[in-house]
Length: 405
Image 1 (cartoon, rainbow, N blue to C red):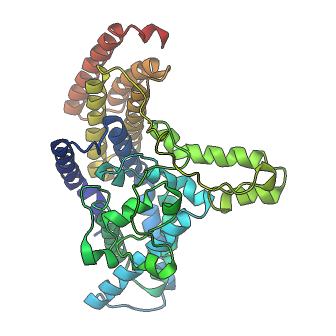
Image 2 (cartoon, rainbow, N blue to C red):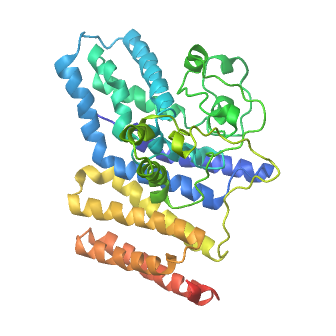
Image 3 (cartoon, rainbow, N blue to C red):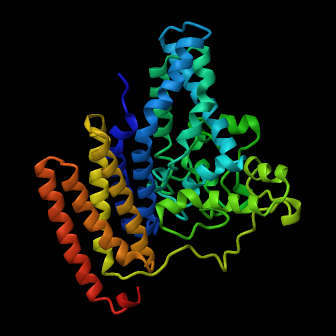
């Protein structure tokens, strides 16, 4: 039986995030910002929803090689589990390292590094497209003969392990720092300081970085994020912006070889006629500022409520999509993604956000009635949408700048 351990762990994730938020407020640490946290969680929700259409196909890709081309018949003993655990972690290291060294792979993985904060919500900030290629790195395990369900279990737990290391609350872990990937090691990995870039790619075991020369100890203060800040809360743009940069660079390159290299060379590489390789800039702590656009304070409760609606609907889809027909499934996912995009637009006070929000709220009513969801869900959802319409209308009425939008 194939079990989605990631989806099952979502409630635990939010409990732990709640504990860290409480600790953050108690200690007055400023590890969290509402806009950044909503952006991080929006990426995670979007990744899980878009991943619904890939999970089965990618699993069967591994399974096909195992069933037709495997070299050995391996028993399901404790020693095979241990060897597979090490194998999964080893290939994760190389997948992760290559995701930082090949532009086309970085274009997907960059999403995880965009946050300028570092807390447990960052662990859930995941690319919507990374799953399309990450599974390829693990195919040698299928060829050797490791059972697909064993692989799926251990790769899931490899991912789950990495949740808790996205925290600043835990400093050093003593002797464990020599063997395990820890919060300290992973803080380095998320740093945009030049000395920290492309370091500590480990999943569970830091030994791979120590063996292959990519280890860096946490020393000076870490500045989180990417060298060219995203400067947006839009989850769709977050997944596409680096692709946009690559395509624009390729268009400026007359030589076909340079067009190809744009996608296969490391981040920072440019053709000679565009200046050649560009090193990551040093960070000036006197001028450094996090992206934090102002928005109507009255919007905070509204945006948080809409985010909760998306979270609840998204969670319901994740736990019931196998029983849903295609049109209700797709309409539910589309509405969730539009809601998350709308939350980002409201937090940025985009000029188009008012018309977009009215459109989104009305579209939700049309979709839930059109595709005949259970009557109880329809009544509750339509009620929420109507209340949201009235709430948003009153917010705009009280906003003196709303007419300019």
